[in-house]
Length: 513
Ligand code: GTP
Ligand code: MG
Image (cartoon, rainbow, N blue to C red; front, side, top):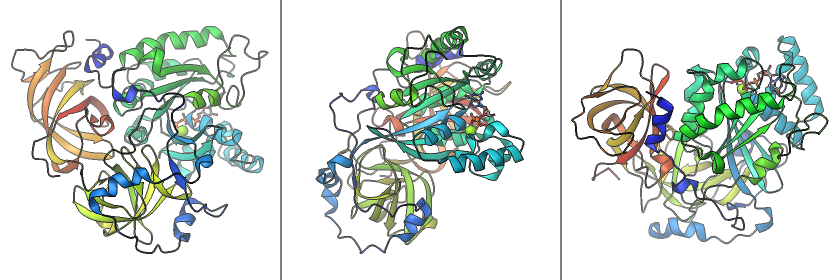
């Protein structure tokens, strides 16, 4: 059975989804209100440590805290730009870190001296051509091996937008890290190597070009810029034929993965290493046939999904640390947060107060959905929070469950495996990673009619779409896909392979909220 065709049947995130709704051109950008600008030159770490202890904020009336936040007036309108989280995905060695590094260089974040230092370091490690990637690949293991392991993070700005780059690893051993990067992103830059043989390996079954696209779609990355990279390579030499070949193979695959190729996908050729067609359009002498935009233009004009700053607050925790209180990191999926707010850490229902909110290096009074934040809390110890917990509205807390119903698309089971009650896998849903067990198969869905089949289902094979009950051992915070797509879609993995993607269709009526 054609698995890609089947993914479409699942319609995890079709063009009809609320995710795909676009902001009208004249709509206001995401709101972030800056307060203190942290002293120049300070790193993230220094910045949090250098903040004076905050006076205990005045606690607001619990009932109105969530609503109030979105109403805080904008004082520094001129400084506001919309914010986008961009994840760089694609097969190993496609050039994700190199392209990310080049973006930072071209946008003036990295000076020539640093580049020269990286050139020397890369040469010493016999990895001459990796110097641009060193901007994103910051730890020794990554530099020695020439492979990203942890998702790299960086910020840059264009005229209209503040971007957070999330540089995902391409190697198949690090897919869980890629999942965590993609789950924080609004849009994806899919990097494909045009070099002879490299496009082919990434695209074939088992290649990460495929796996990343499918995961990105499942994890809520609603738009993709597909950059055909390494156009400068001597096997490519800015060949239109090669570019067209890659585009023509990718389009049906992207479509079958659920992307509306006309609306949500844009292709462009670049050289990440040389920096061609990135900040400025490629010279006609180099590439006479390209009349489209360069990467910065394409990024600038991407439309972002509508987000509701007045929705109930939801921020899945991706990391936490101690720093004059407890600091949690994560992306706001719904609602707004203000200094002084009273919130709950779910699923342990711990009441907390917001002492400070940091967006990139800036301390802000208020932040809306889509922002990556560090939030300093009082009322909870760092040990009592795990990644996967959700900072949540008091009035409408996120449900906490140990069981839920989901519609699953089986992609590729391990050899000889059958998918039946008792099947165990690792569940990845927003920042949650939990062992889970399929406790009951409820219905198989006919991929053609999209209707449930009459026959009782005991097991299914690759390509099947099935509704089932899933259990986990400890409470997890999730939402129905139809209510909050970002918090209701997931992947199942076994032995390091993605075996299914799914969406939460039902939660127990008395979830522990
Ligand atoms: P992983 O993090 O391991 O998934 O790889 P990656 O996608 O981040 O690739 P990386 O940026 O580390 O680059 C891999 C190799 O491709 C390096 O040798 C780069 O110099 C080379 N490379 C990247 N972009 C280009 C390009 O535009 N042209 C050429 N010729 N080589 C490139
Ligand atoms: Mg990399």
